[in-house]
Structure formats: C-alpha cells, structure tokens
View 1 (cartoon, helix red, strand yellow):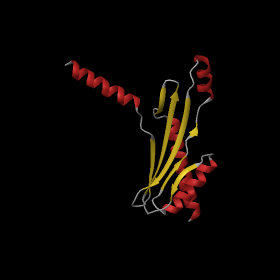
View 2: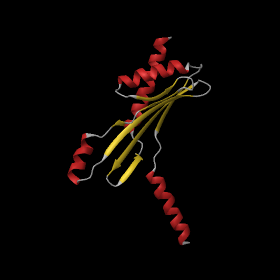
View 3: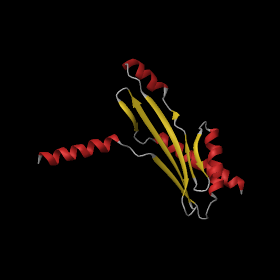
View 4: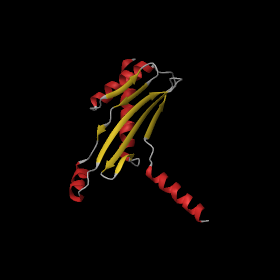
Length: 145
C-alpha cells in the first residue's frame, strides 16, 4: 500500500514539474505553400524581435533562438529574496505534411539558482501571443496571394 501511495505521489510530482508548451493551430481548406508560410513566419517573428535558430522551408519547420523573457517584476522579486531567476521564450512554427495545417508553439521556461530550465505553466499571455503570431502569418499569406 505504501509503495502504491509513493508511486502516485511521484507521478503527481513529475506531472506538476513539467508543463507542455502552448500550441495554436490553423486548419486551411486548401494546401498552403510551406516556403510561403516560412517566409511569412520569419517576417512576423523578426518584426517582433526574434532571431531565427533554424528554418527549413522544404519540411516547413521554423524555430527561434531562446529570447530573454525575464520580467521587471521577476527581477525585482529576485533581488529582494536574493535568488536569481531567469525566464526565456522560444517560438516554433510548422506546417503539417499535407500542407493544410499551420501550428505555432510558444514555449516559456524558467530557471533559478536551485533549478535547471523547466517549462512554465501555460498562460493566457502565451495563448494570446500564439494567436497573434498565427493571425499575422495568415495576414501575410493572404496579402501575398
């Protein structure tokens, strides 16, 4: 019985420590050009201040470099309690193999003096940013036609 309780507690602890990124998806009625989506995504993300880590137009995958996302509030709190907390964010854009779906992934991580980088819990801010990026990509695609 104790082993079962310990196993359940471990599963909860692991589940609480790992959070999935925010994923936003658009399904297109017609196939989209992967190269056009990648070009639009690069333009949108560079305008927002992101640097590209990897862009593969043939496959339809893009990833930004990790960008510092440490808020002023986090910096002030870190200074008060004496522990250094860092936050970072990465954006991914992909096109499904059938070229009918565009996905934007927003991953936010946090690290402090006591832990390594771990994904943060999903937030409304991440959802909004994913939706905005997806909408801007779609706008660029529509304007290009």
